[in-house]
Length: 103
Length: 189
Image 1 (cartoon, rainbow over the protein chains, first blue to last red):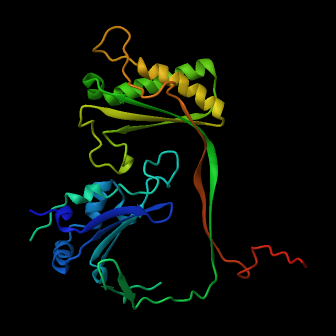
Image 2 (tube, rainbow over the protein chains, first blue to last red; image 1 turned 45 degrees about the vertical axis):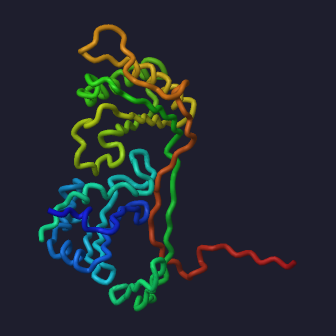
Image 3 (cartoon, chains in turn red, purple; image 1 turned 60 degrees about the vertical axis):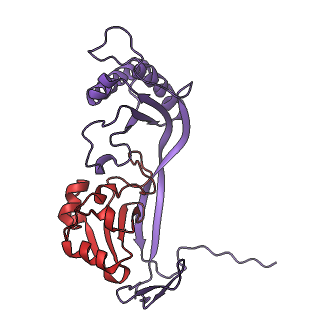
């Protein structure tokens, strides 16, 4: 079965201000985007499980016009603080890549 | 900015035309206020572990090191505040609390970054120097006698990093007027 990493053109993460992380899953093919979107594999429960976060804090947006799925949630610690390990938040998307996309 | 009616069209391999987004004026004028505070001074240590017996029990080995450094510091510099942040690359160094596969080291080596933070550079360096000695000789039950369990790429292993900060202010202000918070001085020249 294809994974999100197989289907997406680009998956990336970055800071959204010092207290939030945001992840963009972008497609260059409307069919692939709809397949990932309609499978509903990127949802609050899945993100909460993968990242050990509270589901209530997670925002998932399916952005049809941009052929992109956007995930945002608060960082466990603010950017650059003592316990932070990724000041720009650039390497926080990897757990999503293995999600299997049916269809 | 409202983007729900925005359109994104590729007009070449390198350019995108964006149209349909809309700027909405908020009736209230606000100012974003962000600020940091200094949390202390940092001295870091970097080291690698290759011994499979240490890697197999890395958590307890690090917990023992943590106990030993606390005792050493209490007996040498006394009751002064400090913190040691330990990151294990090869396990959860990149993602920390967000790492879903944080259980154990999967590969045949690990990189450890220790960050000592206290109120002064001198104290952080003193603690880091003790930590480097205790870490390299931190024993495991498998081996009898003094081990050298950490490969430091540099000597001396302690690296001063200077003052370190963290975000502290994150507020939205509603000023009396857009310029009320900004001092303006006029001079005749």
